[in-house]
Image (cartoon, rainbow, N blue to C red; front, side, top):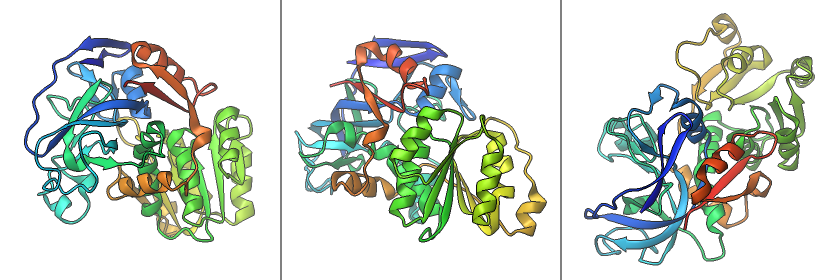
Length: 351
């Protein structure tokens, strides 16, 4: 099969790789659509993401959908309702061990033995799904209705990330929320926060085009912090401080400045992947205002929630969809996805 494999920063090659046989309880999915994530872009541009660096050729991609081509085991025994050869599915890229303490506590996103599609965290790397087929455990396949496009199904993963961040934020009904960063995850945090009952969402970014999309998705205020840095402090003053902040940029300066924008008793949720090393925080301000600072990493049960919300039209994400590019032009797709002025979410058309 063909796969888009990264050898080093800016060295993405379309290569033939062997398909592996199925183990019991696994499914082979013919991949249809694959969304290019911020972590994929980081691997492409920097050769790594966060603390993880590419040390061997890595097939990228974890936001994918497709059609089941083969199953190893009786569908009834696989305990996935509706799963059969020919089923259209969204693929959950998380493959937790299901046995460790975190898994048994219902927090499988923190599994110490996690195998996540397209990740260089382990060696050998866990190969991703920007390939003509991918093998996953059967319970990673979530059937989607025929009425749901496979492009939309491939968006379940990033929406799940945003929904998990909102869950980590706590009760949002009637709250004023700040979202730092109008990239794909930040924009999905906007609709997720509003879905959870937020009274208003303020969004910051460095570019006007993503902020236009944020307004389309329901943001009450948008602030270009490069053009008007004082506007964010004024917005916080007008509201008496933000109740909740979702940091989706992964920029140290963004996190450092957040405590001063919060009301006493507020909560900051860090979901953007920060650079290597430490971040100097105003800890006394966190202490004196009793501001909670919590992390949000990937997702757990939110993946199924995301599929259901998209399939039922309860969350609308159309404004972030920026087009599709064939797998054969993967390098071009990555360059487009990295242009904040032209694109938000670019998909590879694989099947």
